[in-house]
Image (tube, rainbow over all chains, first blue to last red; front, side, top):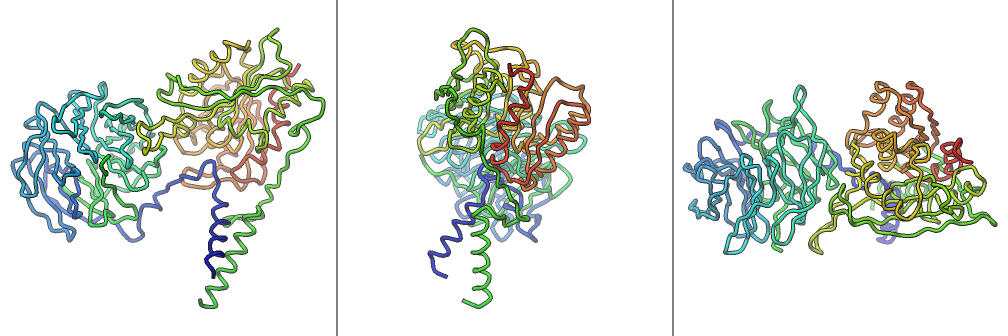
Length: 298
Length: 300
C-alpha cells in the first residue's frame, strides 16, 4: 500500500470521529493493560506516603510515623534511604535531581542529595504534600493551617501563602504547569487554580468532579495525585485510583489493591510507565499504557 | 505484503469511504441520518432579517476568569414598545452560524414574520475558557464544567450577568413562558439543568442529542424527574438511534429514559427519536417545528 493511500484511509477514519462530545473521551481502557494487575512492592510499614520518582525511574516513598524513606529499584528491591526523617510525608524530585520532602516534624521543607544528606529549603512551614515545578518553585499543602504555601524557585526561597480557606491535602501541576490542582479529602471535587508567574494562584474552581464515593461513605478521601503525558489526572481515594480527563470529567476508578484507602500515587520505572500507589502499610505497582511526566523548566 | 493483508486493507478502505460519505459507521448498523434543511430553515424572500452582533464577555464573577464569545440576535420586529421574549443557546457559535446545521436566526426571522413565535431576542453563548497565564500553556476549557455540572451555577450566570447586560439595551420579558433555552449534547443537558434549577426564569427547553449521561452525574435526571413534584417546564427532546455509546453512558437509552420519565410525571414534552448520530443534522432539520411547538401559545 502506498503512503498516499494509507494517508487517505487515515483521513477518512479521522473524519468519523464525532466532534462535539467524544473528542476527548478517555476511558480506563486507554490506561490499563490486559493481564497487568497490582503487584506488591513493599509491606510491613505503618503508613506509607509520598511516592516520588528519580531520573533513573527508582521510586522513593515514606513511612510517615516511622520517620523513614525507602527506595524501590526497578527490579523491585527495596532499601532504606533515611531513618530519621521527622515524620516526612510528601516527596518529589526537583529539576536539580534533589529529593524534596515535607519534613513536617520540624516544620521544614528539605532537599536530599543522592547520599541521603539534606539541606533546609524553607522553615516554619507545616506541610503534608508538595509539588516541585520545572523552575524549582514549590507549592505545598498545610491542612491544619487551611492554606497552600508557595516557595520561590530562586535562591531567596521566599515563602508566601497562595490559597486559604480550604483544608488541602494532595497537590499537583498539569503537564504544562499552568494549572495547580489541590485535593480536600471531604470534598467530592478537586480544587483547580491558574498558576501565575510569581507562583500565586487565581481563578479557583471546583473543576474536577464529581469524585466517586465509596459505598456507605459521604467523603471520597481524596489525597495524593499524579498526571500523565496527555493530561489525565490520577487521584488516590477511598474508592480507588480515580482518573480524570483534562476537561475535569471522571474517566473511571482503577480498583484498589487492598481494602483500605490509598494515600498517594506516582509514575515510576525507567519508562515512567508504572503506577506506584501507597496504601496503608503497603506499596503496590502496576504497569499501564499511560506515561508519567517530568516538569520541564520554564 | 501478504494477500490477506492486502484484502483487509482494501476492505478497510471501502469501509472508510462509505463511512466518510455518511453511509454508515464502523461500529454500528448503517444509519440514514440524511436530514435536510428546508422551508423555514432557509432564507425566504421578503422576510425581514434581524441583526446579529458578535460580543465578548470577560467580566464573569459566577465563572471567575472565563472569557467567551457571544452573539446577540435582535429581530427586525423588535421596537422596544413591549418586552421581547428571550431564547438562549449554549455553544452559541454553532447555533448562530448562518451556514451551520441549525441556522437558528434564519428560523427566527421566518417564524417571527409568520407570527409562529413571539418577537424573540436570541442570545448565543459559547462556553467559557480561562486563558493561561503563559503563551505556551493551555487555557482551561470550562465547557464541561459549565454545561455538565448539576447545579444552579449556569442559571445564575445567565440571570446575574448575561440577561442584565442585554437588559441594559433591550426590554426583555421576565415571564418564564417568554424564556427558552436550548443546546446540543452537553449544552442540551445544560439547558434542562437551567430550567430545572430555575423554572421561575426558564420554562421552555430545547435539547438536541442531550447528554443525559454520567459525564458529571446527569444520568440521574430520569429518576429525579419521577420522584420530584412536576415543575412548570416544557421540553422538546431530539435524539438519534446512532448516537454515542461510551464510558459516560448510552445517549439513545438516556434520552428514551428522559422521555419516559417526563411522560410518567405528566410533563408537557415532545420526543423526536430519529436515526442520526451525535450531530445537529436532525435537530437542525427540526428547528422550525420545535420552535413552533415550544412557543405555540406565546406566538402572537
